[in-house]
Amino acid sequence: MKSKHFGTLAIHGGQEPDPSTGAVMPPIYQTSTYAQSAPGKHKGYEYSRTRNPTRSALEASLASIENGSHAMGFASGLAAIDACMKLLSPGDEVISTNDLYGGAYRQFVNVYMKYGIKFHFLSMSQLDVIESKINKKTKMIWIESPTNPMLNIIDIERVSKIAKIAKALLVVDNTFATPYLQQPINLGADIVVHSGTKYLGGHSDIVLGAIIVNDSELAERLDYIRNATGGICGPMDSFLAIRGIKTLHLRMDRHCFNANIIAQFLESHPAVGRVIYPGLKTHPGHEIAKKQMRDFGGMVSFSVKSDRAKDASKVVSSMKIFTLAESLGGVESLSGHPASMTHASIPKKQREENGITEGLIRLSVGIEDVRDLKKDIKAALSLLL
Ligand SMILES: *Cc1c(COP(=O)(O)O)cnc(C)c1O
Image (cartoon, rainbow, N blue to C red; front, side, top):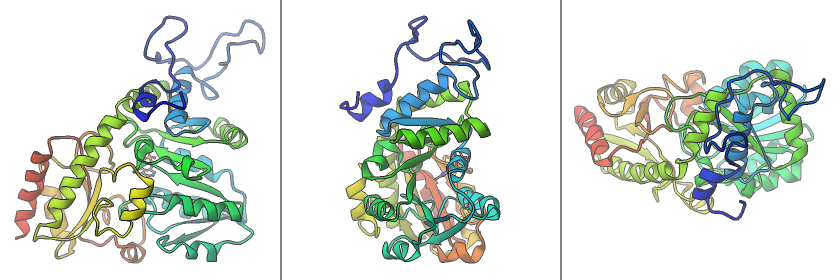
């Protein structure tokens, strides 16, 4: 299957008709345990925390679309991130970005710092700042690209070279890009993590996470951690994620198409300040995005001209098609106000330093008809004129 194109892998990668019935879709194996014919003699499944056939089918699909050798399904993106953190020991250091997903930041700082793990949060637009923080204790470099919500682009291939020299694991949270737009393993990443809650699931109906690696020893360590700590996804959610992945390429094409039109529209609007979209030539990471991504994604951030929370709030509250909600990556368009929602757990001073100002709005542009989306934004912005 490795030689096939993405759209074929999304549908068939790692998938076989169910051996017992020929069912084309993997059944939802809603079972905790499996009969053994003699003690320790079973068909590869003994207890569903360890392995479940529906989850295995999802994992085969995930490995295939991220071009990895192994994948693991988790209860949430944060459970997947948590399993990665458990690779570390007290005294180890992690270098990460300063505009990390808020929940990952909260886990690192409020949970793992007290176990003696040290984190450096850097602006990674200048890669030499990473090198300046590397020392013998650096065990992991943790990046997102595009970042959330500032949509900064990090050159994954260049960071992977720095990580290799430092003998540190490079982890890429590929939630925003998805494997259709960007494949971090091909760019040198050791571990790819996902919030499958977002584009992979794609329909805002599950919370799920994933890890994909291309190394059997690393896979074994992570699988051991998962079985020992139990953060698995259930069979029903695994099934829905498989179903979501089958249309990932189609959905992403439309997300990107719509987002590009919305970004250009916002750029021309008098009530708008900054527009941040990697597909715009004005975006500082545009060239790198062009190099490492197939297209520029479905997320657009912008600020209202006044940059005040009151005006941003007026816009997000009055849009009708864009629903004001946490999360992203579903077929429906969502809006968010990072300073008071997704990124409220980051201290205000640090938030503002990273560009997450009070007037910033984040759009997850859905796959509706873009003419209606444009009209919806236009009506809301007209309240500020
Ligand atoms: C949502 C998200 C997560 C966390 O995933 P959950 O499934 O909500 O636990 C991690 N990283 C990014 C980039 C996200 O957007």
